[in-house]
Amino acid sequence: MDRLPQGTGRWRPSRAPAASLTVPGLVASRVLDAELGALLWITVEANVPLIIAAAEDAAPMRAMLEAFLAFLPPVVERIELQGSRETFDWLGDAAALGWFGDDEPLASPGEADPATPRRSAIALPPRKMAPPETTYLVADDIGSDPGAGLFGPRLRLVVRALQRGYGLGATMHADSLEQVLARLASPPASVSADELRRLGVVFVMSSLGAPIDRGVADTGAREGTRSRRAPRAARSVQERPEQPVFGAGPAVEAGVWRVAACHYIRPLERDAAGHFQRRPPAVLTTWDRERDVVEHFERGLIAELAMRVGLERDEFEREHVARSRILGALAASGRTSPEALWALLERRSRPAAGSEG
Image (cartoon, rainbow, N blue to C red):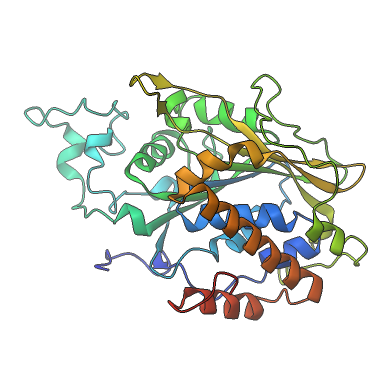
């Protein structure tokens, strides 16, 4: 790939050494279960955006995000967005999406008039177009106010860029899906309702003592088949001691965190007659605090999830089962280290690798 001239660490291969926190480690510590981990493995691998939200400042959101970004294919490269200093030198058609630089408001796509260039457009640096299908954008602390790392028109442009096919992994301070959407829609980001539909998967973290995001009550989104028992992988480690898996850094144990709710934001769709359809977000999973297990609702969404990642339904289901077994087995056997995960991913990336690594 013809890389852009970026600063150190900004533009780099996705298959870097795995972070100290791994998804098998999250499963072993019951932050999530193997079924949810496998579902996110499939979606992240297919460049579907992933937003991790939590209300608490101490939440290890970036560590969680890095755990899932380890699943990006070797051909994918990631761009670390620079917050308020982001120049979008990787987005060749930034002007077509309404970006004319810091001195101008973000225009609606298509408003640009080549005959009357704006003052800032003349000073914009040259741009290439990073290939959307093999590029994953990474952003820390997105939000609606200047206190966030990426906010305002820059944040809205990043969301607009998702229509080109870019993936996005981001963290955000919010305690529910409603709050995530409301903060992104608020000025100065002012992300439109249809632009928000490009966000993909949103999961909300909660500490054991915090209120739980139970999903969007008014959407009728729990369309799947509810599991009334703990998933096999979760039961297999239910009695295991909770393990700190965050390694160096703040003294935060994974055992005190859970994925309170995981949501799928449906993209803008057309029906058979060509009319736009704007269906509400769907709840994939929630956390049952009393039993400390994950409840699953994604069965009714398998067909549209499979379409989103480019698989047939049967193939998606087989992959989900196989990857759930892999993560459950690694967690149950204690093989949760970055080295064990790295070896697994290396085997699976080879052309001759079997479907279960």
